[in-house]
Amino acid sequence: MAIDNQTVRKIAFLSRLKVEDDKIEPTKEEFNKILNWIEELNEVNTDTVEPLISVNDVTLKMREDKVTSGNCKDEVLKNAPAAEYDYFAVPKVVE
Amino acid sequence: MAEYIIETNKGKWEIVVGLEIHCQIISKSKIFSSASTEFGDDPNVNVSFVDAGMPGMLPTLNKECVHQAVKTGLGLNAKINKYSEFSRKNYFYADMPTDYQITQFRYPIVGEGEITIDLSDGTTKKIGIERMHIEQDAGKSIHDLNPTKSYIDLNRAGVGLMEIVTKPDFRAPEEAGAFLRKLRSILRYLGTCDGNMDEGSMRCDVNVSVRPYGSNELRPRGEMKNVNSVKFVMQAIESEAKRHIEVYENGGQIEQETRQFDPATGQSKLMRKKEFAHDYRYFPEPDLPPLVLSDEYINTVRAEMIELPDAKKQRFVETLGLTPYDAMVLCENKEYAAFFEQAAQGHDAKKVANWMMGDFFAMLNKKRLDISQSPVSAENLGNLVELISKDVISGKIAKDVFEIMSETGEDPEKIVEEKGLKQVTDTGTIETIINEVIASNPDNVAAYKNGKTNLAGWFVGQVIKMSKGKANPSIVNKLIREKLDQ
Image (cartoon, rainbow over all chains, first blue to last red):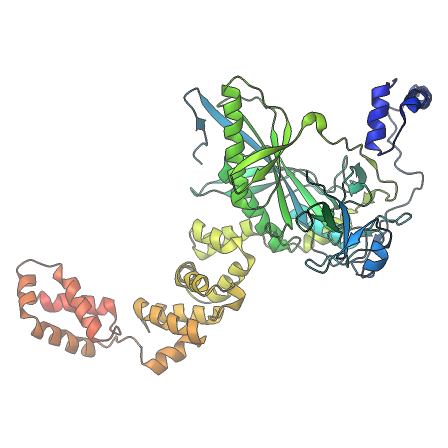
C-alpha cells in the first residue's frame, strides 16, 4: 500500500504536526519505505496466530477504589499556557 | 403496542432507532486514577497528574469500576466477556488532556443482552443490547464565562463511564422513553450509576433513520449527541424522523451526520457531516494489558445480584395480587418498592398499593417530599390499612386519619383512639340513628315506598352524617333497607 501526498497532509493534521510544503514529498517517501517493509511482513501467513497485544505476558493489576491523589490544582494548572479562576483557559471552542 | 407510523399524503413511514447511553459509574475514585469522582467541587481540585495528562503518568484500573460494570452487565441479562481489551480513541479536544480517550473497542467487557420495556398499553417488548464497554469521561468545557475563551474543568476527566449500545430495535419514540426509564431503574437498583440525566451522569445519543412502512432496508441515520432528558429523547426522535421523511419525499437523500438537538426549538441542527467525521485511529492501549476475568469472579458478582424491577414486578403481581400497572409504578423506584413491601407486611397488599398510588403519592407530591422524608412511615401506612380491613374505621374516616398522619406522623391507632373515630358496628346504636332519620323525613319515606327506591342511598348518607362518619356503611345500608322495606 502506497500513500500519497494528500494522506501525508491528513496524518499531519490529525497528529497536530506542522509539515512544511517542501517536506511533504520526503515524508511521503519515508512513510512508504516503512509501509513497504511492513508489506514484506504481510507475506508471512498469520491466519492461525492471535494478534499480539503486549510482549509482556502480564495480567492486568487492579487498584483498590481509594482516593489517594488530587487536591493539587496549583501544580496541575502550573504548566497551563493560561489559567483563569482555577480553570484552564483556552481559545473559544464551540462545536 | 399500536404501531407508530408516520403518514404523509405521499406514503407511510416507520422509524428505526438505536440508542447509545453513557452512564457514569458510581465509585469513589476515577477509573484510571485515584482522584475523587465527587460532583460539584471547585474546579480542578479532583485532578491527579494522570487525569491532567502529564508526561510519564500511567493509568491503573480501578477494581470497583470493573465490579460495577460486571454487575450492570448481569443486570442487562448480558454475556460477560472474560477477555476484554482497552484501546486508545484518538481525538483532539481541549477537555481531553491526553488527546486520546482510554476506552474499549474490539473486545468490550459486556456482550449481547436484552431488557424488557413496559409500554403504556400494558404490553412489553424486548430490546436488544449490542454491547457495553467501559471508558473514561472527558473534562467539562464552560463556554459562557468569557467571550473569547473557553474554560476547562478536569474534575470529570477520568470518571468511569459505561457505554451501553442498543440494537436498532426501537420503532416508536415511546419505546425509547420506556427503555431509558427501565435502564435508569435497573442502574439505580444495582447502585452502579445514579441515572440523573439532568446532571449529566446518564447521557444519551440517539440514532434515527426512517424507511417506507413494511420494508426491511436500513437507511443512513442522523445521530443526535447528548440529549439530556427522556422527554427530549422522544422529541428528538420525532423531529429527526420528520426531517428525514421531508427530505426523502422531496427527492433528496439523507447523509450520515452528527446533529445537536435543541430542546428550546424541538429541532436539531447539523454538527458535522460524515466526511468531517472524526478519524479515531483506535489502537490497543499499550499502558494496560488485557483485562481477564475468571468464572469464579463472575460468579461471585452474580451471587451479589439483588431482585431487579422486572422480577419484583412479577412477584408483586403473582404473589401479592397487584395489577401490572401498580406493580410497575411501585417497582420502577427501588425506594418505593421497599416502602411498599414494608407497609404491606402482614396487611392487605392490594389495599396498601391502592393507598400508596393514591393518597400517599398525592401527599408526597403536594408536600414536595422524597419518599425517604415521608412523615407517614411504612409501618403506619400498613396499620392504617389494617384498621380499614378490620372494620375499625371506614375508608372515608381513614382519609381523615391519613390527613392527620401526614401532619403529625402519628400512629393511626392512636389517632383513632384519641379522636374517637372508631367505626360504629353495634346494630343497636345504628338502629337508633336510623329510627331518628326515618322519623324526621316522612316525605322521603313515603316517596321510597312509592317506588323511588334510589332514595335508599340518601338515607344511608343521612345516617352516616349523623354518626359523624363513624357508622359502618355496609351495616347502615343493610339495616336501612330492612327498615324501609318493612
